[in-house]
Image 1: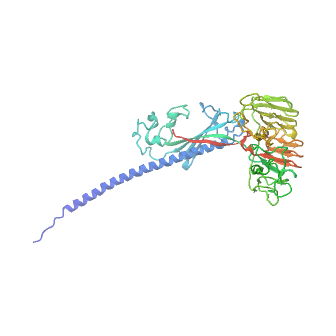
Image 2 (image 1 turned 60 degrees about the vertical axis):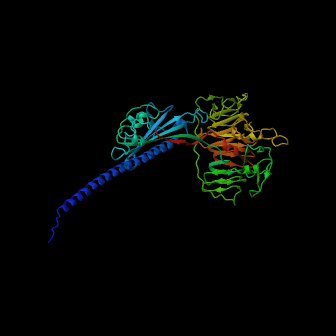
Image 3 (image 1 turned 45 degrees about the vertical axis):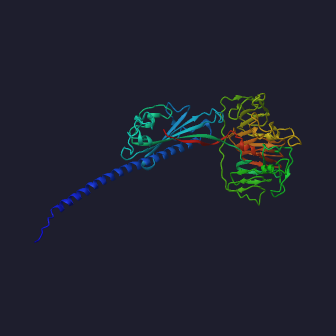
Length: 556
């Protein structure tokens, strides 16, 4: 007998299986859609988070670039190229300037707002006439996608992880990632950053913001070599030489020191001032840093140079010159013109003659004086000489004309003489009565007399005699032509010269213990040049650039 098989339930089983697959597929698709959506949200937020920092950094760089133009604080450039005075209340103490750069980056989704405000140094480290700056940059990145976050805004609501006013700022990712869907959370809590103008400020599009703050401080020039000129070098004299010494060492050179022969440089003129003890390698080592730098190929050597030489496109070689150090003919550089300082509050002095009493207590706060020229004899005296704690004084003299007379700087005085005309003097006309820290005794190096007196808290902070008399050539000059500085014999010179637009000439048998910045330099006869290495620790009061002293992100 045949058995009949019933197959009616097989269709139902298939339908149930298909329904199960559909349901599972829907669940999987829903999970996939949610995961993809949250992934896209998170990815876009992370992208915007990073781009907001890029925008802030771009603003910081724009602000810093503008600050670097402000070497002359009397003519600040923060009023052109989109910069404007910051609205009131501006950051304190001010003044302050602001600029917004919009629609850059991918699809124009980035913007930055930069605020620069001038700060005042209360420590005396930076002169009051030389400002430093705070740069605040806000980088904003437009946030694309759905206006939601991966971490619930309510999860941490009222919790201890965020600030008390989280109701206005948001919590969770909106706070963590600085996300603003409707209102600017930073302005709601901190206003402009200093607590001004707090309030709910609506945003045009959902956005992420990040903030950075820079502090830019001035960089002062220090003499790192003997001579640095931008046009031409012709020196030293055929019977002279360029070398170096260190005034902090006890047997440093002075005009009465003997010249000692050294065979490091080939040729007949192989002498140098490196102290009265040639057997001591310490002093010999100090003699090899009379470096010369020329910003062109115009280089002519008379006597030997104990140091390195650099030119721009020159053809200087060891075989053709008497040079002890290295040679590099591919070193371009520029030196900006030196603007006249602000003389507001300076005391007017009689033209050409008289006594100036210095009472300033530091390089950053000197006594200020201004005159039309120096044609007679001017003496700068120490008004703090009787002080038991700090018997030193500082002066800044601005000469609006020529220097053709005698300038005397008494012991204990550090003097800056800024002049807009020409200088034509004899070496003996520049009378620097200071002494080096390494030669404080009447007879340095004599038997039984220690030549070096260690520094004390009341000691002169400037170890170099040369660094007590500093000349600055202002450009443009009063005549509108190239400035000239001419120094003839007799007499030796202990002074520095920073005159980037001046042609400087030494004639006769004058010896110059110095460091020079100029347009050109020439020396004839047996004029010698001796660079004091201690000058690389002495700031000369000229701002050559700004540098970033602090760089932080404002994480509020």
